[in-house]
Length: 264
Image (cartoon, rainbow, N blue to C red; front, side, top):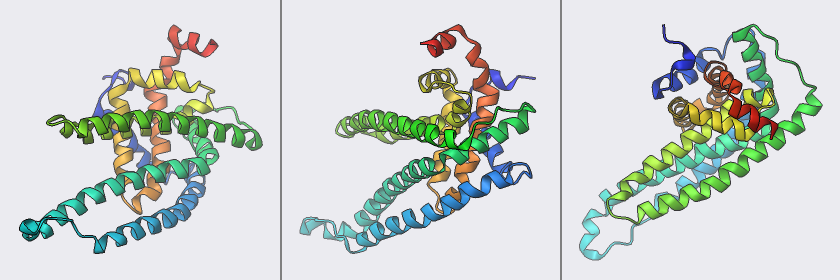
């Protein structure tokens, strides 16, 4: 049978998130899932309220159309609303991920540790919580800087494509790929951080499993855009990211190029 490590596909990557959902209620993980879910509930109410307020302002919005095209206003308005809703949901899902991860990072690190112990049978060395909290917060800020700086570049590429005839159909493709890649980095990083793996090294290893990374990250991003379901999607993504780390990434640390990068 083909080993997990030899697989590198969109489908196998997405399955890690599905397996993460199945393990949410595992007796040995249940208590480590409850705290992040409680944090997510509070943030969900806050962010969803903001989203609904923005959307309610669009109810009275009218398209500035010439009089000759007024008969198309209703149809064009529904199309415009649909596009705006999609953009708002993507922004909502992305914001929900970023904000919850900053506040829940220490708890996600512990959850990742317990998942790895559960699936491998090996005990991961405990780290005092007072030392873990500042370290994980700094790690989250480092990831945030990466996402913002690279995200600006991706946005400029999407803007350029959007202004180019024919190539503008690539805009949602680029946006989706970037979002999926970001989610893969975000949720595999908890296990990587528990093993003190450098952030740059992690990204190199994920590039070697790029199809699985995009499949896993894409599943996470899609579910994080769904209100209510996104409350449990984040801890499920941490569990799935840890399974991804154990099966597809951890063994890559043995490669000389990654050992050299760690020493640097």
